[in-house]
Length: 125
Image (cartoon, rainbow, N blue to C red; front, side, top):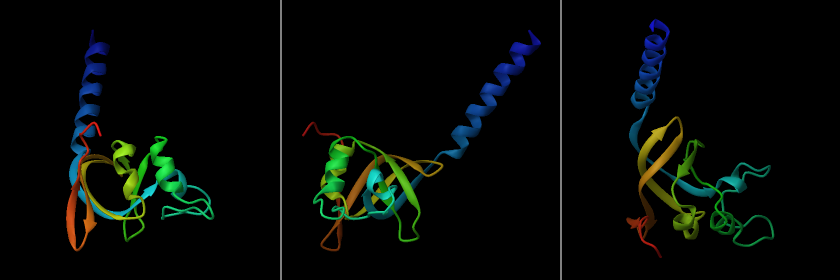
């Protein structure tokens, strides 16, 4: 019985540590395809060599989106890649829960004409 109590206490403590590590954050940077950026050439734009729209194509296939900050911090974005695909190579601002550099996105905005325009992450379109 004591072993079960210790195990339950350990699980609860671990869960509390995980929840404490989570925090809402807002991060701004260039939207990249993680497949392109984490590859050998660290591509941050939409085109990869002679292949046009490589970043968009990768996100449309379901590869994870990433955000590269001006300090070269890379964050994986947990969100529908299809929703973000049209914005590869553009400046985005995302708000969400940070899990050690992996951001579960609640809101995403793209820079347009000096303003931030919210990206619809919930519609079926």
